[in-house]
Every structure is written in C-alpha cells, then in structure tokens.
Length: 114
Image 1 (cartoon, rainbow, N blue to C red):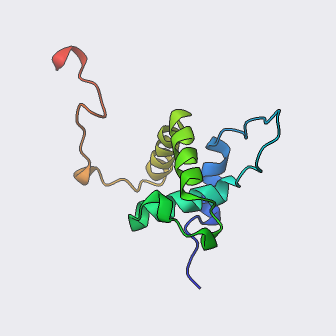
Image 2 (image 1 turned 90 degrees about the vertical axis):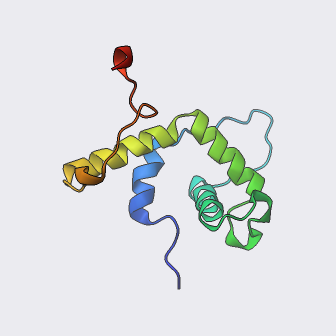
C-alpha cells in the first residue's frame, strides 16, 4: 500500500495552524475534514492534474472544495506560518545547508536600497 500524502507527523505540524471551521447558522453541507482536503490539495499539486479531475474515490471531496480550502488557508496565512515552523524545525536540527541558501529581495526587503 502506498504511503499517505499527509503523514501523521506532517498533520501534527499543520493541524494547529489551520483556522477553525466557520459557523453555519443556516445549516448547509457537512464540512469536509481538513486532513482530507489537504490530501486532495497535495495530490493535485504533486500530480499536476486540473482541480476538476480530482478523483472522488480518494475521499478528498471535490476539486473545487479542495481549491477553495487552499485559497481560504492562503488568505488566513497558514502557508506562511507553516513555512516558518518548518524552517525553525530545520534550524533547530541544524539541517539547513547554508552553502545552498539564497536570499533575494522577494523574500527579504532591502532597507534603503542596500
């Protein structure tokens, strides 16, 4: 059997960063589990398939649901916080190869043009 796209270790890092499920005062469809949505997101991004071709058999909801969740999480700053968490973990483990690191003005602003 293939390894899951979202391992337990990865999920333990990501889950606390996700915003809570929004309230539904008028009911509506049940909320797709965040881990299932993340699995669908990773599958589409790794495979390169269009969102609408996400296989329903995977149990990840529809491609549009996964895309919407990706967009909501981006708006909430989840990916920036995850990037920081992962960099911190690599730094504490002394696992960053600074010989291969690059910094440009897209990541770090140049103060006063310097």
